[in-house]
Image (cartoon, rainbow, N blue to C red; front, side):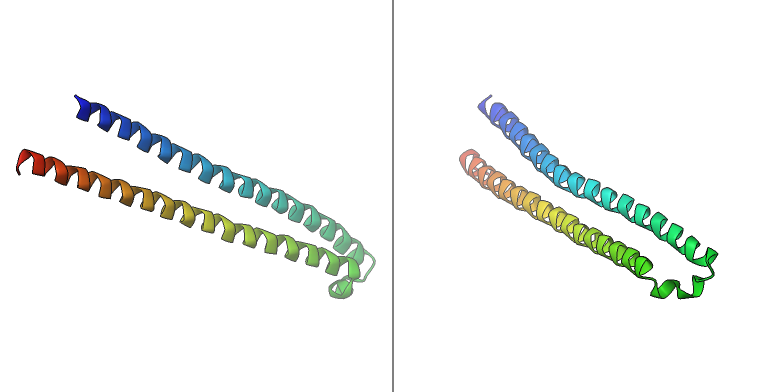
Length: 128
């Protein structure tokens, strides 16, 4: 009967550890995804502003000079900066995922080693 309760306790503990790790993982990734979404909205806003500026240049007959326009270049620079931030966040998300997998693998290995050790002791007691 004690074996049943120890297995039950172990199962509950494993479930709690697994859940806690997943909650932590998804919380970190979720925050980064929200930040990325915010940056993508900023990019859309800048692109809209850039389109308005480009329209004005073309309307005024200066469309060929758009690549030299200070406002257009400023918009491009902002977009490039936001894109760089998004890429950094992508790397961070991947790092968090790898770290979580390593943490879970280490826990699983530790649990497996403990289970094998207990099984060996049980087999020796029974005489197998």
